[in-house]
Image (cartoon, rainbow, N blue to C red; front, side, top):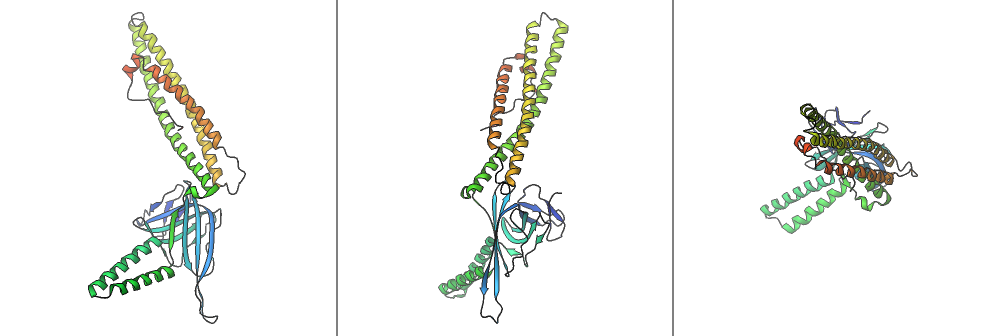
Length: 346
């Protein structure tokens, strides 16, 4: 079952999270949201005492959360937010598949509205939508600027107005619950970052292989079409005069042999590329649970060696194409450009 999220506005499903989409739109009410989805690789929760007068009066607390989420595209997202209260009510743990849904103000997080644990099916809705830190700063800056302009027009002491506005702004930032989403630099994340950078390289190879498979499939169809044309030409020449066209018949036969070898090579490449794709998928899936399987074997080197072997077949195909360039008959009957680019391994 593919995970999805309910729309906070109309409560209908708004997203299929089987892929990583950073922005989603509800098909029913057209509300736009941002979302981060992945595996929870780190979680921390601490509380802060905001106000305490005496044992006879109520004490006010605020809880701060930090969630590190490893996304499907092998990036690390850091979600930090605070909520009023002392109790830890967030139903997520290390290793869970989670998502965080937030409203947007342009490209900024406006409010954090929902955290879903897709492993357990539990959801956490904050007591109130949590404003994004960048959004709060933008709004606060706009208000402060308005106050300063108003003070200037009213003739109030600008130094005093600036000081009061600054202190008020700092106080507001201190007591306001905010949420912030950022992307961690993998270079600074030690062993985990190194593993994720390796995964990103594998994903790049995966995209290249998928594109190359499409090219090879197109090549096979184009080459087969060219073979059919050359075979038809041979039959015409044989029907007219075998001796008169003997040289061209021989050259056409040789060209057809080279083209068939290309199809054979392409078929082998496609078969091996599909196998390599499965190896990459296994390696990515293994990495996804690497913290649960710390001794899992790493086949990244084996994948690189397999790609190097297939590069030799690509080079052989390129040599065959150079041979074909010498055949006049192929040039006459080439329909479009069926040659594809080689060079899967950088």
